[in-house]
Length: 92
Image (cartoon, rainbow, N blue to C red):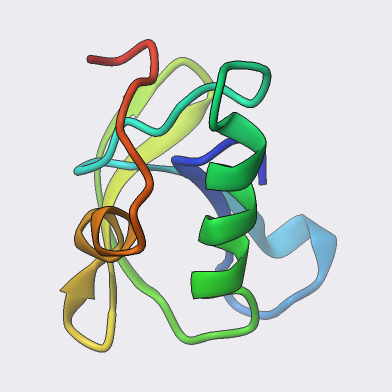
């Protein structure tokens, strides 16, 4: 994972060649070196790591797929905001 709004999802297995970097569509997390960036990344990891996240791809942004991702029916953005992570990335 890069920052507080990016995650890698496995498509067809956990082998490295099956990983796709996804940018969460509904949350603009702080960049990794910005205030709150490292904490935001740690929160995202705590929320999604080794869990079944369902992502619906939308468009592409640079080298990433932009997708709406849900965990238990709740969007990752809502979970991040609920965990107290403030938005503030470059996409806002």
